[in-house]
Each structure stands twice: as structure tokens, then as C-alpha cells.
Length: 262
Image (cartoon, rainbow, N blue to C red):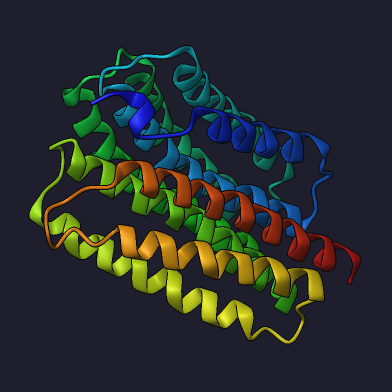
């Protein structure tokens, strides 16, 4: 099964370059810090997902570049968050991420194989939890309705990649029975957050429009995630999850801008 059937490389590359551009352009405040810390959550899932896809056989230059960019962006944003960190607790949380990140990065940089993929799948759970703790530490300091929306919206990016990661692992014989329940849990979390975001009284017409686009893509992705018939549609899942990722990054940027101007 070729890599081309699993993902549209150009869309992935553009999305990742978009994240990098946003990251470089922003000055740091509580809203942008939550956005960056939230993007770190997403990258833990994206790196594993991309690694699994590369290991499927078609080791193209584009797929390797996507993985390289994700690793580079994680390290860049981590350094920026360390420079921003206003409390001892936040500094300690960021240091704990470093101890988890180094072995994770080391595996991700190795030639993709199933052993490495299994290692990443185990390690990314702890790294995800550590990144999540940083987001909530920053949110607790800021504690505004706007920054809460930045967090909720940003977390949808992670869920899009998490769902795709689980699905690709199952399609590649790297899954487990518990992964089915994890898919269901992630789906429920995504749907619940999308409902809450759509109801947010602070939404602008532009945000409402973007969330409607997300909802349409979600319907497409959700139907593709049904593996009850043991039939996999990796191309559809890859395409829909990437579109949701890009859209939710745009929505998160909109909330971040509102928060910064409030």
C-alpha cells in the first residue's frame, strides 16, 4: 500500500508551514502562549502519525520534510515557552517535558519501522499529558473567557491528529483492541467541544463561518472513522483530518487575536 494512498503530501506540507509562519510572527502574551502550548499537544500526535505513514513504504522527500518540520517546530515553541514562563510551576512543567521529549525525538529521527512506531505510540501519551499540563497552567494564570476558548479550540487540532494517528495505526496493523475505545472517546470529545465552541457568545461572524466549515469536514471524517465493517479508508481520513487541523488552527488564531485585543 503506497504512501500516496494515505495522505496528500502537499496539503500536509502547507499546513505545517502555516503553523511555523504563525509561530514566528507572534509576540508572546497569555493568549499566544496558550495557542503555542496547545499546538505542542497536537505535534505529539502528528509526529507519531507521520512516522507511521512514512513506515508504510513510500519514503518520499515530502513526508520526511513534514516530520522534520514538526520536530523543529516543537523545539522552537518549547524554547519560546521557556522564555515566557512567568512562574516556577510552569518552568518545572516545561523541564519535565524536556526529559520526555529527548527520547521521543530520538526515536522519531530514526529510520521508521514498526518497533519505532510502537515506541512512539507509548511515549507520545506521556508527552501529550505533560504538554496538556502546561496549557492549563497558563490558562489558570490568564483565566479569561477568551483564553478558555483559545484552549478549547486549540485542543481540537490535537484531536484531529490523534484520531488520524489511531486510525492509521489500526490500518497498519499497529493497533490494539483498546484503540477502538480511544477513537470513540476522542470522537466524543471533539463533538462536545465543537458544540460548545459554536455556542460561544464571543464568536464573530468569521469564527461562526469557520466552525460551520469544520462541522462539514467533521461529518465526513466521522463517517470515515467507522471501522465496524473492517474496511479502511485512510486517504479520506488523512484528507479530512488535515482540513480540520488547518481550519481549527485558523479558528484558534481568531480567538487568540480577540483575546489579545480584549
